[in-house]
Length: 173
Image (cartoon, rainbow, N blue to C red; front, side, top):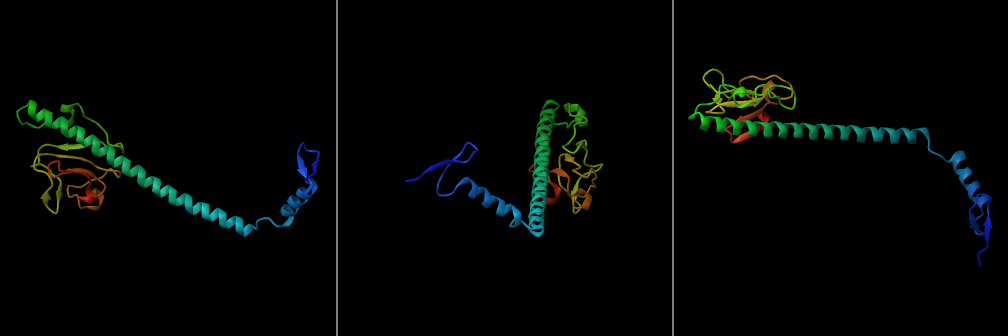
């Protein structure tokens, strides 16, 4: 039969281990058998490595979301351009302002580039035009672009290629 004792802290204990014995065990653990500085340092280093990995994963996630937003914006503009060509007997709009998207910015704060006349300047890959109707693209995160999408400064551009069959990063086209 167990006997309950009161330890002065409004708790009842069995006679198997009194409150004093428990406090003595706790004091013994705190007095000398704690973590060493090296063990704590290892925990901090491991947490730091995990935080860095999480940060890079988050940055990749944010970049993918920005690309998806740019592609979605370009799909919207492409539909508006198509509607304009129907209304004006196959004539492309002279600029994005004609379809109420003048000065419209991509997720990185740069204006979208629309080029209806491909005889002036057109986007190419290896000297071959990527579109036959018009060019529509974002200059990407770095804000710089060259006509050849294989150029290092153009790889982050979000492009429309193959007359609308492909929309996405230039580095994947």
